[in-house]
Amino acid sequence: MEFNKPDKKNLFKHLLRNINDSNNGLKIMFKESSTVHRIYPIMLVAAVGFGIFTKFNALEIVILIFLFLLDFVTETMNSAVEELADRITLEDDKRIKRAKDIASAAVYIMHLMVAFAILFFAIAHTQGFTWWTHLIPA
Image (cartoon, rainbow, N blue to C red; front, side, top):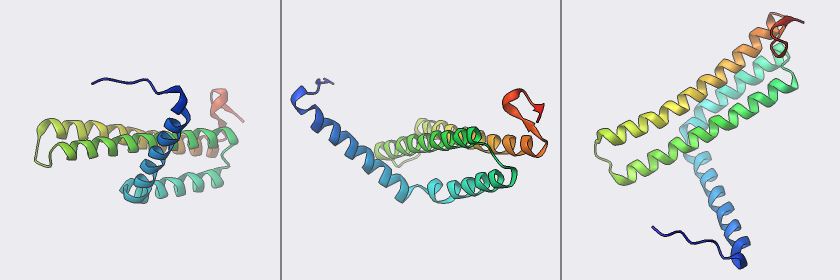
């Protein structure tokens, strides 16, 4: 496969085309991803609920937003792997199943990381500790 350098005259057009493709991918994720429709609302309600109840600080909110975005990235990559695998074959194939399972594991790990962060922040606040100062009582 040969890769061509983008023509400097059409670099802006190339960039706009890439942005359009990325927006199409986001539209697909928001329309078709069951995780976006089922899991994310639960995670957001939990984060907001715990955050309001235990008074998360600005740093914790930024960390949670970052983790939610990383979670969305892993879900997007998992969906891309599944799309490509289904394009190759819809028949049972051990290697394709392994690839799908590995991509799914990445999403699962991110879900656990978000849940752990929410619970850690909430527990730290209910116990009167500030985690960023090595759990010294506030």
